Image 1 (cartoon, rainbow, N blue to C red):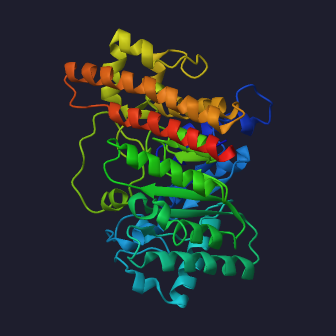
Image 2: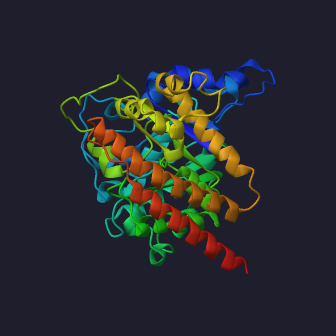
Image 3: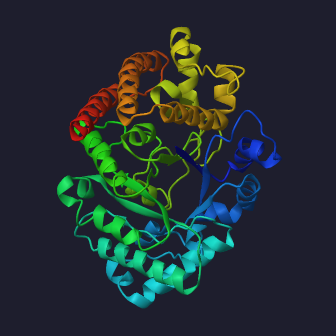
Length: 412
């Protein structure tokens, strides 16, 4: 099972440290806790150390061109807007409908990735927010033109095709054939290593039963047609892997969710945000809490870990990961998040059947719901205006059990 780590601008040293066992050439007991590294295009350009680390550790290196930003206005001085394939003005589907324009975009995107040392290429991709917004035909055409370009230029590197779309618009079963299935079929024209299934929805953190049922069901469907990585899915990565994906992609304690409208709006000019704990890929330090499967801001995590009964339920039990217990979780939060996620995936991989994995996800979610209720009370007593969404865990448990039962009936 794959864990792909998205390295932020300040993650290069941690990525190098976590990759050290592979770069030494020795057969050390502790393996590298991820199977590939991905960096946003501006980060890859600013941090060549990431490429060097991937090369030394013989890990696949991906450069995410983030071409979905083409559909939004960008400050001209921002790093992404200055990339050779990007720009400051928002484009509409009609602006990218012409073949010559697409060919130029494909060439610039692929050339940039190769210059940055990418060993697994990402074709240009757009965010499809509505079924009738005109972006789906553009996306399918970009895949075909990428295939032609790679063949013409004799580029034999494998490809990760990213399907970035609204869950509500493209997740229902009635929409699979025209949307996701068409995308997967077109991706097979390339040397596709995997399809990055990147589904976006609003109010993440308050997820309903219907939302999670749609998410797991569409992932299971896609995984039956192609190798699938749950892309930008740190919050539900383990559950989606249990449902059939071969792994997931997330940041090391940050970038755990991917709502594309927010990803675009966050890059518009805005006042600085308050920062309570110092920098990381997205501005604040976070602490991954394994029993909850997600990270909380470090100030909130401290409140929980200072409560002795809650600490006992949230403490990392891996001495090799966190030798100083809660102190290591808080101080070495990137390392802890990565190792803890890798450990969970390793546990799932040891289970021989999907039904066992889904059962484990369901039981873990039930326990997480109880912890989340108590954690919210601790946070409120500590003066933190934060509520851990216990209902989302209850819904996840019910959905995982339902998907498991449906899979069992399919086999029968």
